[in-house]
Length: 437
Image 1 (cartoon, rainbow, N blue to C red):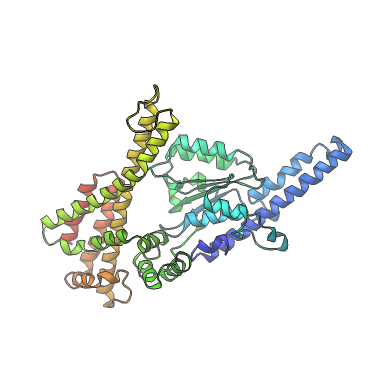
Image 2: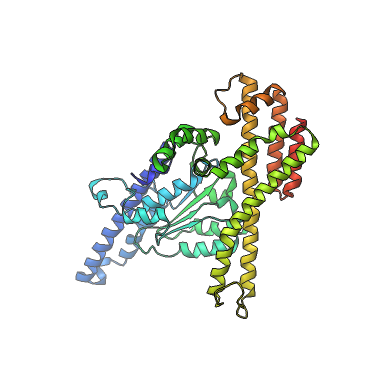
């Protein structure tokens, strides 16, 4: 087992990252040897033995190698941009690379590649507890200037373990314009031992000035067979169920795992796939839209109930209040409590939007199956095998041009939600368009 085992269906990306991790390890080793030689020389010969330039020579390999400027570190650079469609494993690849950079396996002395998966550096990085690895993901719609400035300050610290200070920004596409400009300065002038790992769905989601300073890695959607294999091998999922959910999600690893392990998620998805049969009249369209929005709101409420109460109580106690919701808050803490409440409200909004978007993705996969059946006449490539009968009914009662217009209606709904249109209005417009075809 290595840190790369969870990076599914990306052999080219794994090869490039493994080579860069090996170069990074060589840089750390070279710096350690130079530092040791310099220390011994100073101890025996005094300050003149360094020739006034020993300190600069000691720092040069890290700076030159981390920037990918040739030499032993030519494949290593200080900033990486991981892109790929949802479910391709961008964040997983970034975390695996971070673990390989922190790998302390003694087997490396025998020629083994970094990223063993068992040493303290690999284990603590993958579990999220390594002192020199900061992983940033947001529950909110955006990442602001304040949070980014905190990251930049963290990035300027020297690594406590003597290897690399690694910042993994999983939602780089959610940076506001101001936050992106703050990040640009740090990426332009990085600390000698700092590595930025940015993740975004596409290159266009990053500022041109940022992506021009990053090495680009483009991940692809893994095959359903590869996803089913990892679900069976790593998570112990029944092979038949693993194959079914991998095919249903078209290679989206995270969604496939959730469907395989959460019966309620499978039930919600089955409800979404029944929507096309409920649009016989205007009343059915409006009811289907209301049910879809209500289900998303319930999901957001469930997340809020699970997280908000604990966060609120933790903050109350941190601010000096006695345990219990009825106790009085110390004077001057109202601002902090309001800030938390605003954050929780924004998180609930994002959760509802994400749940709706997931339902719309499932609905689009239904109509893709309809289109495939209309154009090929074969059901061998259907993603939604469990909805095969419904797919057949819609396919025989409509034309490919209507199916394409229905797919356009779903895309328009997703764009409307991104533009902050009221969810119920956007979904009602979509269901009416689906009925009209």
